[in-house]
Length: 68
Image (cartoon, rainbow, N blue to C red):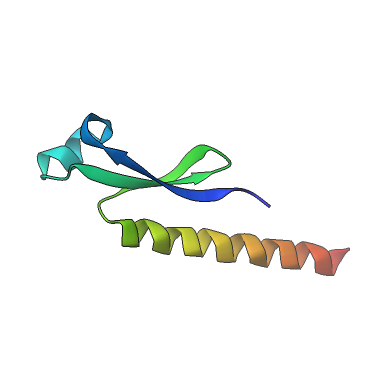
């Protein structure tokens, strides 16, 4: 099962586009340590994306076990 995590970036690590809009923090979705989605301006949006990835991952695993 892949590691699907939400990480936060603060200060100068926040992409310039978001800093220009006044955001001093953002969130990324990481899958097995690699960025896969984001940056998100809200933690809630990142967590929603994580939930979709987790559901998709579980559905794929379930499908794989049905084929075995």
